[in-house]
Image 1 (cartoon, rainbow, N blue to C red):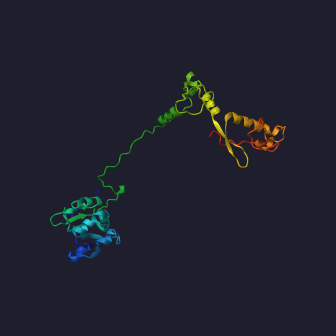
Image 2: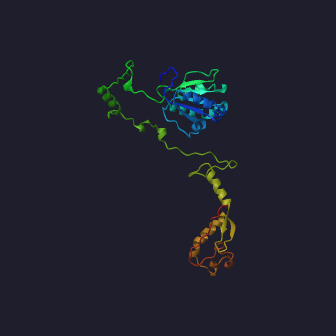
Image 3: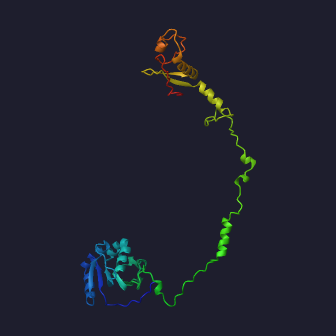
Length: 308
């Protein structure tokens, strides 16, 4: 923790006077500069240049910084007060002092802001509205070297650990010895665990929402229900001609057309006109419904719109 210095007014070192347009107009800023200039060198800055970071203070340059602002200036400074105080702390020399003048009653939280910024507050806000704070001898981010510790400091105790090689070797022998028995995972299984599960399903209910498709070896009746629905369903058939007309047929007609299409290239026609299409076929022609084809070519039926 940084030591707290007792404040004594010093005239050694340079001073910085910070004012605003308001205090320059009423003469307070000029009066402050004249008073400080009688005993030391005084640098001058306006508040807005420091707040806007148009001017960056040189680190550890000023023995004291004096700020004189109006009440409205202090109120407008509140949002940027932490960064403003950080700049002032950097610009002060160790044990340098900060003087805040013409403070209003609304600045009652200023001492806590100064403490958070790293200052030691030396006075509260009296009736004179003047607050003094001091930069510590050591900055808050400064660390002490262990080589420079005082004679009264207590050295750190070294923690003694058990480094017995024999005990370490015994510990590793317990955890990695090949003689340690290994449990066979198969021996933990019971005959019930090894039995292959038999797939079962609930009886089908035609009134209930449809479940997934019937499984292989279905025993609940869903496979029979799907087959009945398939036989009763209609399909849309394209005749395969260039204009491609579609017609609706049942499943039995679909199967007949498939078998006829497979047999078409091998069949012989008694009238010699079966391959020309339905318009040239007799009523009992087995190729009725098939598209026209050339003798010997493979006949294909488009069932891409099946089950619509």
